Length: 257
Image (cartoon, rainbow, N blue to C red; front, side):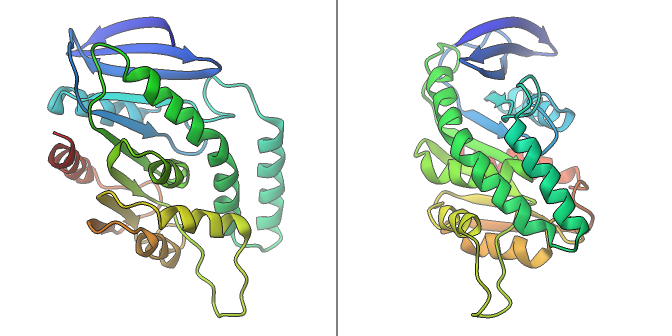
């Protein structure tokens, strides 16, 4: 891990870093020392590690809870180079949607493919960050919606250090009948959900134009967590109510502190 810059404001220290080819950012309390809970945040599609919604929530975790927060750029996003294969798939998916195919299964397939790369990357980032003296090997949480959910479900399923997760704006396949086949990537995503056993707070936008309501409910149902709560609010994909941020803080404080 190589730190490239450090700034502080309003009680929050922000450190930009690279780990191999992975660009990331770490937020901690100013003058932090010793072990503390750590939240890994997954950004949405077309966004990056310092997207406004990510940074706003991260600063709340730091100032109101004393947590550390880390976020990294997903391949093909932020400070990472463009990925020709991902661009080709995205272009192809757009053409398929224009021709009448459903968007949600295409998104699920793309996210399952990207997760095979991001899960080991994120685990390596956790290893490096938890070696820092002002973070330490404390309890870990995960927050991610939309793309952050699609990549986060297999990550939470694979990473035993994660004790609680906030997920949402994602879905699983909903076959119309027993004769309807499920793609390998969709089956892979649902299999990962079945290995998630930590407490989960799951966000659904009831009028989501990108993820069908039934698909979101199917993913929630597929999670194997004994403690899971569905938070459904009216509105479109990007219209999560601000008060859900307060609920997220209480959720992680309860499970990580």
